[in-house]
Amino acid sequence: VSGRDEAARMQAQNEMLESMVTQLKTQVSQQEDKLQLEEKARQELEDMLLRIEKHFKAEQAARRKAEESLSVAQEELNLERMQVVEAAQLGKHYNAELAKIEAKRTFLEEEKNRMEAEVSSARAHVESVQSQLRKEQETLDMKLEVERMRLEAQRQTEVDKLQSEVDRLQDELNHRKRQTGADMARWKSQAEAA
Image (cartoon, rainbow, N blue to C red; front, side, top):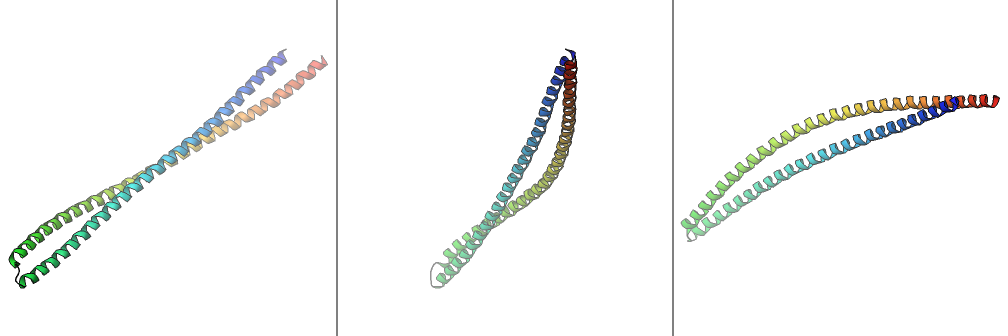
């Protein structure tokens, strides 16, 4: 009877060890899933920064287009002025038309200066934002790399620790199974001899 009780006790211990091994394997899998989620979040952040940079490039292109449109308007104004002068030489209202052209030229000059100021300010702002963005990107890359290395080292340490514990428990379980088998064989032999 004592042998049977001992066998039952050892069987229960073996089942508990098997349960612990299963739990440890589950923890290893969960750690690997967590690392994959963190890598996905980092990729999404990098994609967002790329979209911001594209937006700033598009804004610069729009500013350049505005400058080109202003240059075309200035050329058209110069042509119109020449035409008015020629018309005045033929007896048309030179002074009135010239005054209108001069007023229009002054207005366009003022608009040109204003737009140039706005473009200059916008360019400076974009350059400042881009510089800041590059610095933040560099800082973020460094932080992400450090964090990735830390998490990788931590995960590897935890995986190694868990794997070591799994191996130890597996060895102990195998040893107990062998011992249990030997004990049961011995008890059986003793029972038959009795």
